[in-house]
Image (cartoon, rainbow, N blue to C red; front, side, top):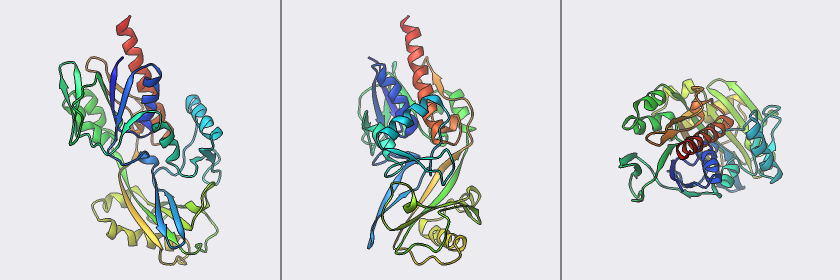
Length: 318
């Protein structure tokens, strides 16, 4: 049985793990976060009017790939996903929050959260993970299911060709604000696009399967986020709130609760390669940056890498 470490338990890493585990491989995933989500993250804030819920990463996902369509159909049958036609005709969301589908995937695997992997060490024919609190165990193969900017420095020490691909796959940042109010904003639309510094704003409390007080997610444009990348959340919050006020006609009251998140690596351009794999050293990478900036691309990339790894192992065995 081959033993694999996957660094990153977002949808790409979990999709890869699904394929490997189905073939009998022993898979362990490591993620620096405290719970499943990645770019499909959701957050809850307590307010005087109840709990407010926000999908502050990917706002929805679409379906084109046949394999992903089957997975989404399974989620829908289990009540974990529904359509959100207000965003677009083919949009889907997780219910009651975007991260539930990732949590469902993670529940099938050995995922170790709050584990920040800083690097990999090659010891003989095996890999050992580096970082505070990392286990001393060795793995036959290692997968980096990370943004390109985080995968590149790790790959550089072991395979410069793979690292070079990651180095040229740059992502754009996104400052995101989450705001809860004690009354509905006096604006008919639930979704706003391309308004001033706002690339997107959505009334999350109006999404299917949602409840709680009036809640909005506000995402700044990549250009504005880049210029203000190193500012603090406290400095960014008034700008995002003011932009929401302006976009909704200036009628928004002071928020009951708010939270600001910086996505340093939010939007990937996509290299079109699908996945990266060095069969000799047993190291590879997957993620949306290898296909395109969509949830589906991350899932497909992970699946492609898993199938590639299994195929290479079968060739060696033959």
